[in-house]
Image 1: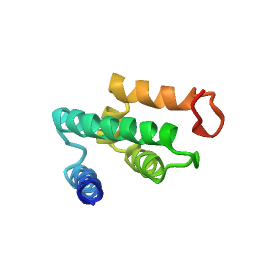
Image 2: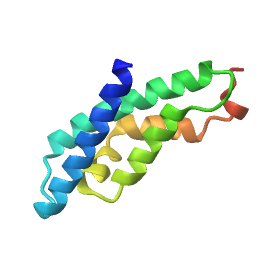
Image 3: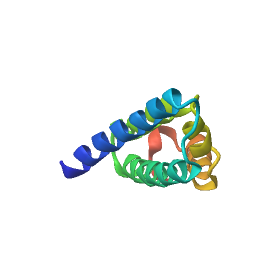
Image 4: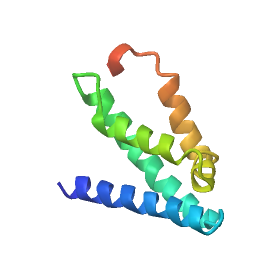
Length: 105
């Protein structure tokens, strides 16, 4: 339950950063974007781990993280997040996972 509240707060904060960026004509610290990237990458890792462990082969957590990335992608902060090696690595790992339905081999 605390994790769900923390994730919701993180989503609001990321959304707010993008709105500040829009109002201030594109200025958001790349340091802030790197911190957001770190948190989002860690969240992606946990979501991917839970997907592998789940028997259903679906993950709402993973879907939420990917939706958030999609929403951020057009902003400076989103582009900075997506340029971080750890984030790119996690996304590539997710994209190249050949296991059907997320099942362990």
